Length: 438
Image 1 (cartoon, helix red, strand yellow):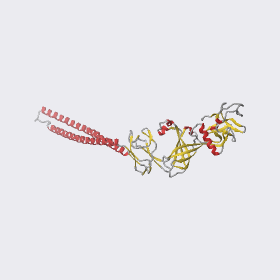
Image 2 (cartoon, rainbow, N blue to C red):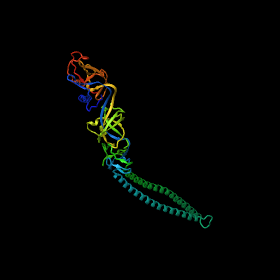
Image 3 (spheres, helix red, strand yellow):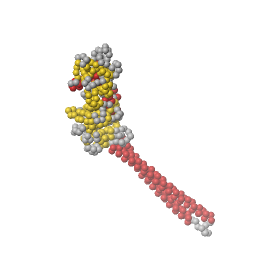
Image 4 (tube, rainbow, N blue to C red):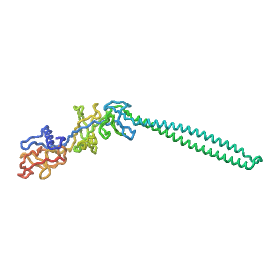
């Protein structure tokens, strides 16, 4: 007999599920005194877990918000989900108004810097001409003063000769000063022109940066395919990308999946996760074509859970529900497979191989301690202590206390208060208490 997962954890639900399955198998019997009984099953104790998930392409190309600014960006245009595109088609456009303002400012700075460079160069060239002329005048003056110095002559006095020699020395000093000023001007010219040229280059760099940002704001398809909008966090809210959504550089916005191979992804509650193992068989039915059944096998289990608030942005009480991501490979492929298609999956998990097991609804806490069941015998109903090794959602694996041929009462709380033979003391009334789930 195989187990079935329960949507509720209450005893009533357990009884109802077990009764329904066992009735279909023809192994539940009704007795006017003891109620419904079920046989002890032998074999693999299997738990069937039903869940929901989505198809996910194994290979896909992700499209992110371009890394063009440290600030948030706004989506201006985006293609609809499912749009077919060719490589190079425009698929996403971010608002580039801020970048165009930067471009205009940079152009104005460039024009001003160029004007300052031209006017500065003109003024320096004019100053250079003046210095060159002054240098030439000083050289001519020196030559003139040198002609006034006549040695070994009786025409001029010694005083006039001394005055002429001093005039020559003064002219030499003035010439040297003019040469020094000319050299200093060369350094001044080089520094001044370099500073103004750097301003021009900086403005040109800002223009190029703004043009790059504007170009990156228009994102094209990196390959042929179909646009898919994944569920992502945008502006601290979970959702799919739309116009006017605010995103950060690097955020995932779109995907172009490959149709070659798909896998299934679902999220299993913590209470069920322990029963799921890598290699477990899965059967799934797509929502769009429920008449088709596909087989799969679990390939991966995430080791850490995620709340629905973290995954879906769900802020109600269910948002605190922790779930584990489970991935399984789907056998074969189908032309109907698409990224994001939802499905219902039934996971067949082996809780314990080759064992004896009974429905958990048959267990109850013995007032004397431990757990017990009521076993149907030829003399009536007998209370028997059992040892449970593994519990699934709906079944318990029995290590001691029962045999394959035994039949146990499925709803022990329905047994009337009366004296029980066997392990109970004669005349003792037993009021069975259902074993709580653990």
